[in-house]
Structures are given as structure tokens and as C-alpha cells.
Image (cartoon, rainbow, N blue to C red):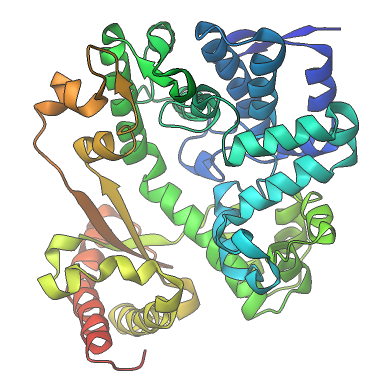
Length: 460
């Protein structure tokens, strides 16, 4: 029996009997307990929406796009809807935060062939879709295989791939609108209906691809700006960055310092079905209960307790890359690479010493985090992420060449940012400003020194 759900973003969303049964499988019900934006609710109280909600939205948007393109209702529309429902089934606790831990602790030596280079959470998704008994029993082995191919490599005509995974895919469209709504901001809003009306499939018979008509250019411009503003104002909000980094640090401390076997087992992906079965028993609530609420005192437990009670690390330092000497600026990005971890840890130890001296209070280097991230300009975003969008005409052209808005924007750069989070305390804005001001020069000098020693071949 088909049902209709009232979705806060898209209104009534219709689901057929098979889709309802798919949603009721334990693998997808688990997504109800994994928040879309991890602990962003500590700064945006309404950000309590989940991967489950988002998956329903993606299926709905995917079917709207497919029907606008007049794809076959029985086979193609159905397949992109199922792919939408299943696309996030491999997410772990706290969504994308788990990806960092999986990439760090996965045992890639046990993976075969091309799998060694693939994203771990995508491998987990594929295993769940093809091996989960309830999902396979409901959809059949062949359709499960088709969904995995569609989510990873594309299936059939390129239009289907574009709907599920592309610059204008249903995933991005839904999360922009959904995250914007639940965070209570207007940055992610764009005219989704006009954008869908402008979709078309053109090209030679065997090379047809998704394009937009001329009357959809402004809707796509809105979409690109929505991505940019939501990134700068929500995804890169300082509290969001701090909470994400605190979770990652807690996992690292739990595995490497506290030697918590259950935590290591959760993130040491080895490609086996046993790993996936265990992985599918975890969600946000169980993670916090097991490793914080009922856990023995330890470094991991202490960091998670800070998060649970909102005693967050503070941003004591922030700088743009252009504030560093040129020879250091070019190497900043490398600090996020795994092989630069000893260098980063040394910088954190030295910064902890400097802050301890400044505040006359012992500060543990395990609670000092150096975070480096980038924000691309809106022009750079349009030239990269949306480069694959073609606009129809006598000769199809890339979107960024046709858009008069982006042609008028000259900025073409990616800004690198360096931030330092530490367990600082201040009672007034005056105290905060004083501490940040006094800490700035020592931290700048320590980061510069670390890179200069690396350039000379010194050990971290």
C-alpha cells in the first residue's frame, strides 16, 4: 500500500509499498539516529534533522528530475528513487565526521584491487546494499547490483548518473534546502522547480547527457550561490568546525591513547562482512552512551564529555594563509595530509606550552587542535563543481562561460585558513580579545618554525 509522508521541505512525498518496506529495514531505520550535521545543533539548535529524512528527500527530488526528463517510469525513475533512499546507508556515527576516522584507521592492505583507492564509506555502502539480507530479499540481487553501480560508476545513460551523482544531483539539492531550513538560515534557498523545468537531455544517441536550457541559468546561479553561502556560514561556522574536530580527536585518543578495542573495531575497516555487521549497529546515541556516558574515565571520555555538556574548545587563533610567508603559505595545505601528522602534533605540543605559559595554567596538548581548511571563492566554485553543467544552444557551452553573473566576478582563488582550538576559559569579551591578541604572535611563530624545519628536512 502506497503512503504519503509530510516532509517539511518538499511537502507531501509519496512512497510505494516496496519503498515503505525498504525504509522499514534496520539498515535504513538506523539513519533516523544519525544526524545530518553531526553536532551542529550546538550552534544551530534546530539542526536535529537526520540522514533518514534526507534520504527520503533525495528520493523525491531524484524522481522529480527523472520525470521532468521523461525517463521510463517503471525502470529508470524507480531505480533513481531507490538509489536516493540508499545513498547514505553507509554513514557512521556523526555522518561525515566518521569518514575521517575510517580513512585514518582502515586496513587498506586487506582490500583488493581498485578498492584500495576508493572512499571507505562508499565501499561500506556498497557492501550493505549487496549483502544486507533484508535489502536483498526485498529488491533482488540484480537491482541491488544496479543501484551500487549507479551510486559508484553510473548506470545506462549519463542522465541517470547526473541525477544521482553530479554537479546538480538530487543529494546536493535536498541537503541545501534541508540544512538551510533546519539551521534557520536563508542561504541555501534556490528555485528548485524552475531548475527542474529547465533540465533537458541532449547529444548524439549514445552520448546524451543532462543539460540546462537558457531559462534555467538564473536558477543554477541561485544554486551555486546557495552552496557557497551555506558553506561559509554553516558548514564552516567556527562552532561546527570545533565540534567536528573534537569528535575526531576523541576517536583518535580513544584508539591510540586509551586503547579502547570497541572503538578501534568500529573504524578499522578491512572489507569483511563481519566489520559491516558490527558497523551497522552503531549510531550517534549508542556512540555517546558507550564511549562517554557509561565509559571509564579516559582521554576519549573526557573530550566527549566536553561535547555532551557543551564545554567546547575555544578558537584561540585564526589566520588566512596569506598572513604567512610565501614559502610557508604554499605548504600549509599539506598539514592535513596523514604523513604530516607528526608535524601537526609537534606544533600542537609547542602551542600547548606557549598557552600554558601565557595563562599560567597547564594545558594538555591532546586538547589543542590545529585545523586547516579551505573555502573556494564563488567564482572558483562555479568553475570547478559546476564545470560539467552544459547550457543548450547552437553549440552547448559550460555554465560558467554563459552565466553573466559569474563572468562579472573576478575572484578566482581558494583561501586557506589555519585555526587553533584549545581549552581556554574567559569570562568577558575583553578577556577573550586580550588572550587571543597575546597568543597570536607566539602561535604564528610556532607554525612558521615547524614548516621551516620541515623544509630543511628536520624531524617533526
